[in-house]
Amino acid sequence: MKENIDYKDLIPKIEKTKMPLHIAIILDGNGRWAKKHKTKRVNGHREGVKAVRRIVEIAGEVGLEYLTLYAFSTENWGRSKTEVSYLLKLIMDSLIKEIDELIKNNVKIKFIGTQEKLDADYNKQVMETCRKSWNNTGLHLNIAMNYGGRKEIIDSFKAITADIQSGKFQGEITEQVVSDHLYTAGMPDVDLVIRTSGEERLSNYLIWQSAYAELWFTKTLWPDFTAEEFIQAILDYQQRRRRFGAR
Image (cartoon, rainbow, N blue to C red; front, side, top):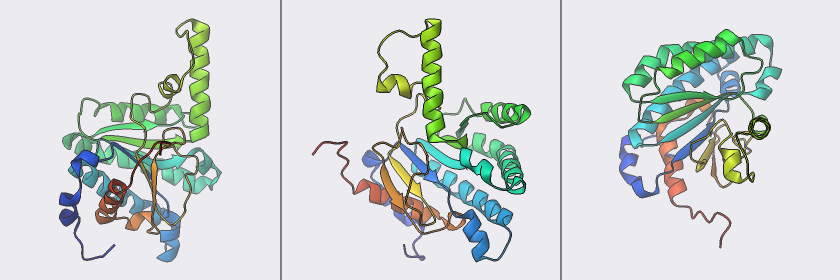
């Protein structure tokens, strides 16, 4: 990606008829960014928030319908208590700070993940803050918070079992039934997964929804991820032929 290219020059190259409906991003590299710049890890996370704002803005500008960002995984609880506490506070503070601007820009925001291990007041505040945007009709922004793909599938099966036992559901368990009980119920499957920092794996992220997603990897650390590179990922996606298992 040439540094002198402006994202506004790339937008006209996007073919609207081939636009992905749902892009998921694994925000990787905050810690390595901090190490590279010889600063504290918390500063890497703080810079990562700036990148989130940047990409949400361009996603809305190019007309993307669904954007899901991997903010905090169920595995992240294994980090130091200090870092975990900071991350949770940063996510909450950022949500509260940005909610009015998100509403102004017609963004509908939702947190997806399990509420386990999170304080009840924290969950309540997230829900009440996000709800303010739920009448919006623009970009659907999902924050994968306390999220794990396998945990999501297990929770889906538990919900289906409960519906069967209560008599609410009777019939064959199909892929659609499972999808309807995931955190992302009602949303389209992921078309494109972007991962920053040079790692090339899904890391338990939207593993059901990404079964046929195109994967796009970059060595760029998340805090340095630009609007230009985001659009380049979309342009690359539009050059691919999606077969969904067919020839």
